[in-house]
Length: 392
Image (cartoon, rainbow, N blue to C red; front, side, top):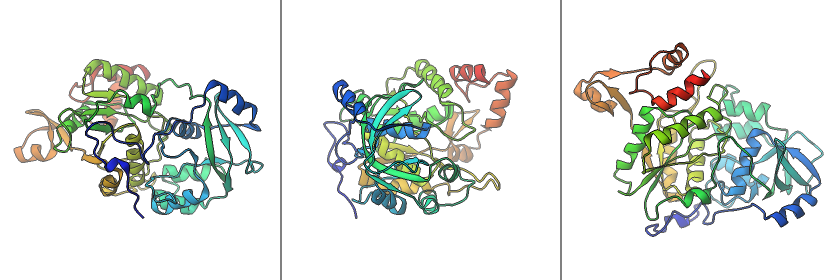
């Protein structure tokens, strides 16, 4: 089943419509907040991942959802990346707990690190088939996949669905502007190219997303929204607080008027194709018309064999196949290399011209950081190196 999306309507005079047609805002007024808290039955503490989901529900990052998915939508998204009504959605959004006493009709006051985040009215409750969820969402049941391991060992036995009423947003080291706030900074009638990352930005990344503005399907007055995920990621990723510092310093250093910067409170699943779709839907809600999608986007490897869980172009193909229904376009990620003769060029160009390519692996970079060695500026920005060296 295919649902006609308002985003397919011309956006020549404004911004792309949100997913489903309307931007959700679930944050209550002060007076409503007092009534909601007074009507709650009990307090439940959110995990880091739960808190990210609650925040994105409240601010409309998961529009058109107005709460955690019910079982029917959960099972539909697992099986066919669509809600039961047919609306595209990459991954299910559910609340989980091992607490068997939580019942339908309960009004839960969701807290996070001492803050009252939201009132959650429980409207459905079930025990999920996590093996089916793993296979449907991540294409594997192997515990070597970080998200499979997460749903097996971190998520609770029970899933719950129901509406959310927002009380306040989490206090974070990295301030995360809402979709409405980001949309207010974007140029009307122009394309907005989203760049997703979960690591510090180096020279090759910068070249990649600034050159995306030259793509033939991007308007001349288009801008890039650099929108890193700052929630939980893989265990060996650099902490969000540190990444935030690198982004802030870099934004000041490059001072490029065609780049917008914002931060996303999203917890990565490393779900490859499904993750790519989820990221596109979220960025559409933040006002993006285009999405840069690279080779092996949001992929991960087996911790035993080192084999990739997804093919190098699976995410690209999946995103491209669903982009038109979203009213968005994809911008393929260029395979850029640094050459002594011409600086950054595509790998194909370098090979055809016989140019001398210079390389620096991530392992070498980290060793040079720890050893106090000079990092070549063709590889990393000085401002980024300074932040990383301070915590190395």
